[in-house]
Image: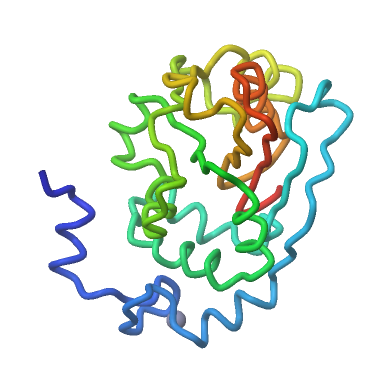
Length: 215
Ligand SMILES: [Zn+2]
């Protein structure tokens, strides 16, 4: 079955997701240079409020404020074609590439099937799919509870809301592995920490996280 996003790529030639000029990578050199000035590539230092931290290492690429509009357009305004832009931002970033290469498997943070139906895509899977990398594992970590959006809740509520929301469907692919979990935004860290907890409890040797942006 051809997905909606693929059909759109056939009908509409790729354009820069920012200025709209024709560009096969979805991000022209000029806009790339501008965005590149905002690259941070920093280590994530989890807040004490997170409680027990289950990931060993974490990195983020941008401060959320610098990439907010793009992110909102990509996630909530049906602009799925922006996946190519984000892919280019990640692959042209050597620090992040070296970081990714330290891991055996790469897992996009899953979204619940109801959210998937609503949006039509998992925003992180769509970006990672461009890598054609067999370390990427889809549907091995799944979201089983369709809970409230984390962004609508306060700190304490977020922690409770996310508990027991995820499940591993195939333990063998995780055991003894260095696992990287990728998400779009790191805010309180509760989502990525809960994913890390499940992975550690199912035998992952090391869990690392990567967020495109940190709020
Ligand atoms: Zn452009």
